[in-house]
Length: 222
Image (cartoon, rainbow, N blue to C red):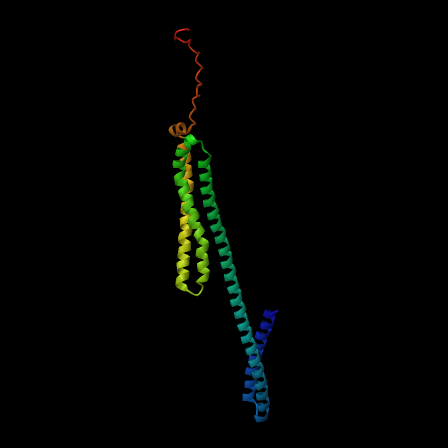
């Protein structure tokens, strides 16, 4: 509806300009009395033209404000969407590293006593990577809180952005290293030497000494 009204104003403005040009041509060709009548009509047309120009200027201002508001809302929605998915990714890193650390620790706690030393050696690298990944991913919410706090501090916001990028990179790297180390350890478990070392050693039965028959006394009989 606003576009139709604007189009009508533009067409009316073009008509008024043509009328004013025609009236000025008639003024030049008419005598004094008729010229005064034409000049009066010219003044009316110019007043109408001024009102149309003011309306068009207001329309342009309104359109500019609406476009600016729409662009600001679109940028805000895009920022909120990016923040939402970053938080989901951040949560995924925390859960992944934490689950890997707990799973590795649980495996060590479930092995037999004979193989616990070897299991601890094999689980050391994955547990370390997953533990560091959990720690770095856990720092991300704190950094994001600092980013929101430093709203009017450009240098602090830059430092927070840099810190979030570094912690995210570290968390991803530790998670990848943890997965890789788990795969490597599983391959090592398939080697014959390692498989033989972690087999449960058979427990030798504890023989019960057979009761010995009492020997007859060799002392002198009374």
